[in-house]
Image (cartoon, rainbow, N blue to C red):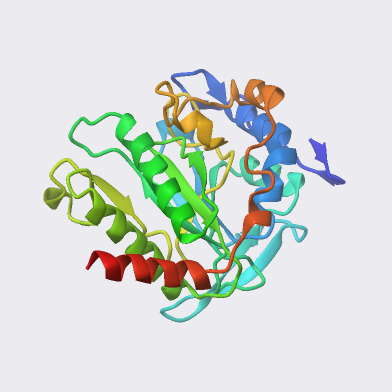
Amino acid sequence: MRIGGHEIEISRRDKLFFPDAGLTKGDVVDYYAQVAEVMVPHIRQYPVSMLRYPDGLAGEGFYHKDTPDYFPDWIRRVTVPKREGGSLEAPVVDSAAALVYLANQACLTPHLWLSRADDLERPDRVILDLDPPEDGHGFDMVREAALDLRLLLEEVGLSPWVMTTGSKGLHVVAPLRRERDFDEVRGFAHDLAELLAARRPDVYTIEQRKNKRAGRLFLDVLRNAYGATAVAPYAVRARPGAPVATPLDWSEVQDAGLGPRNWTIENLFRRLGQKRDPWRDMMRHARSLDEPRRQLDRMMSERA
């Protein structure tokens, strides 16, 4: 495949990656080549952790955070210091060719840092991960939580955005100016979740232990940490049917027919043919955390 001035030899196109859907490695590579125009603007500035499945879903997957030596020189790298010492060279997927190259290396799912390659210490977003409880509650509970979080984020002065994860739930994201470090952003996310859980203690919890949740939805803020990652918009998930993490309009969250895996590599382009990428302008709405932090503190003190 020739793309972006680079020749990429695609190997074993016919290898079955999603047995249930009859989808091959070539189908995955072709998907990423086609979606690159929409996807690359969302990922081009961030270190990537690669979730690789060399034998497709029939085999084992593994995370690969370091760039292998055999990757070509035109794949950009960024040196990422480890908290425990040492460093790794993470890839940065800043072109369609780089995205296709990773797909050819059986990277089904790129996961992104929450901070950009040029300033790893300061995230440009806060993220809350919403999955349904494991006791049989449906996806309606996740939709309700996302809508409640939207109202709370707007109440404190941030701009909320939402995406299906392609797995179990939704991600609610608010873009930030790069002014605060991970500890400050994670502390804000924790307090936000704590306030929402206090408002509706019968529905939400911040209890990490599953046996303490009692059927309530866990407001997960754990991704707001140095070195943590979140699935990239439009990334393929290692789930039956090849579902895709898909940015949404908020009106879609109100639809009872919404599920976390509504869109796949087979129907995503029909969606994009009917509507523009809902996240195309998201980072233009990045805001300082200063006033939202003060507003959240006021709201928490009033509740106390």
